[in-house]
Amino acid sequence: AKEVCNILPLQHFNNSNEQGTGYFQVNQNDGIRLSSYRAFLKPGEDKKRENLKIEIGATVKRLIFDKQRNNPPDKDSNSASRNRSSSSSNGREFQASGVEWFDSSDVTQQVKTARAKKGVILCSGAIGSPHLLQVSGIGDADLLRKNGIEPLVHLPGVGKNLQDHLQIRSMYKLADGADTLNSRAGSILGKLKIGIEYIFKRSGPLSMAPSQMGMFAKSTGYKTPNMQWHIQPLSLDSWEKPLHDFDGLTAAVCNLRPSSRGTVILNGPDIRTPPKIDPNYLSTDADRKVAVEGMQMTRDIMMKSKAFSKFEPVEYMPGGNVPNYADSDALVKAAGEIGTSIFHPVGTCKIGARIKDEGVVDHRLRVHGI
Image 1 (cartoon, rainbow, N blue to C red):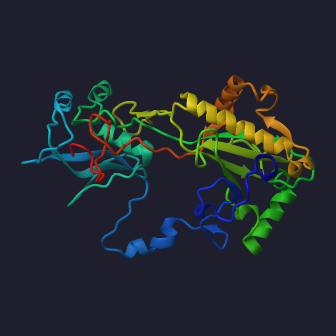
Image 2 (image 1 turned 60 degrees about the vertical axis):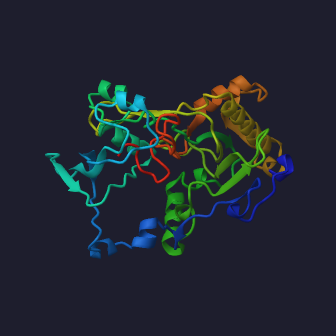
Image 3 (image 1 turned 180 degrees about the vertical axis):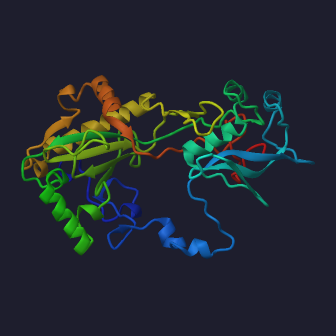
């Protein structure tokens, strides 16, 4: 990267806002991933806390709302919201008071109820949160009615504004002896060595994150890095497929600040029916331009640098499908074919004005109208 693109090594990604290459830091303890639960709650301690009860295998059916009295006016409302909702007014007319849920271990799927004394915190992520709001009657009123849900509060922004990082996975075949995970894990003996190293040293491939190395760079017109690479000493067609039978490397680039916006929409009144998710990747000219520049930079580093020349790299994906990297249209098509989610969805319960900005929550993270 330094040789071809003048991108310098960084000792630590988090102490700089400049482009550079380096190793990712991970949350580990003795070769084992250290989750927030293990770090702060400590396994078993939750059972000792009188004010904490964790239900395992629970699927929330819907949120429970009670009608409020003497509700204060909500400044961010208008007549359109009142007309579109069967119950909402210009105040917070409903109080979230609990949840109904299924116990997955119960074959009868009997509905259980949990009631709140003060309030309900909804934290089911960018997919689960808007879906649960919608099946509970919070969302675009017309959309809810079409799916058999009687609206409580008309919030057209619920499930809109979906943003995600699309990683474009370029892959390269390397010369025999490159010593990638493909060859290490490609035989019974190799798997045995990996297991023994981990058991006795807590090191090696089983202690590693999927991506060990990364890079940040700027595309044309950006003052700060807007592209990130995840470098992996392995290659496979997709995560459910086996490693390739040749030594390979994956260099996946993603646009950190995409302008494309997608949706999460309920697919019927039952929470157990997965919602329709449309990330709408590469739907803007800006995103397509960044994708093209990222793929071009990947190829330049892999194919033009002396550092990689000894490994005799041959592009496997997109490979011969895009022989001319000056062909932007072909690159955009290839990006759509080899790109996958890096699972960073955000934005579907947006902070903002209720109608004007299609906001879902206010500056205190309270759902509008609730």
